[in-house]
Image 1 (cartoon, rainbow, N blue to C red):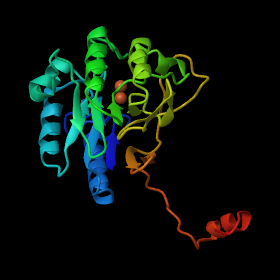
Image 2 (image 1 turned 90 degrees about the horizontal axis):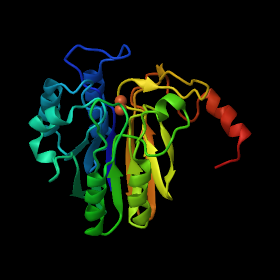
Image 3 (image 1 turned 135 degrees about the horizontal axis):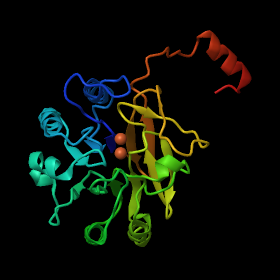
Length: 274
Ligand SMILES: [Fe+2]
Ligand SMILES: [Fe+2]
């Protein structure tokens, strides 16, 4: 089973740029790249910050684009989104409490979209109502379950990024810990950094994002940092007992050298024969 995770697409009004990059063009490049390179992907998930500032026009253009994709898409919202505006355009994506959450069937197990949005904050929240929804949703399915959300439930240990992490990580973690045998992986975004780890023994990962890139500087105490690292999305492959998550840096425009080129000769010399 192959899935694509894109995150932090930050769509803007046409022609707008963020960090000198055009998020609409970059999202389109990501979609084109993913469809060409991964025609066997069965679904695309986008883990929030869909619109840069929660604009209705961004959601309308996104909906129109997704309706023309050959594979199903599953959307989470992030801090840059506006839940109310999002749900005006995607009314079917609210759960019975009005959160943007759902479970969806996959060829191997179940995917779940979680809503970590909170009003007037860049941080993430997972209230008692959402925890109750997740407990119930997990109770009625067998594993493996793949969770998709915007905010990071684990710290990056970079101060400015962690001030806007999931504030209710303990409450959310209690649900994860109680279901760790069922939950195969938690996928998130928000940091604009590629990272991986685990939470209560459950593997977690995030790709960089399809537009602007962050940068990890553990000495920076106050400011979030931006860089010119390549745009990326994640390719997720579930094959037997293995879950592989690869960061596909589709925005890289430098040289790619094949075996047989001079630097490969050096590499081969220093290593053993395959
Ligand atoms: Fe973002
Ligand atoms: Fe975010």
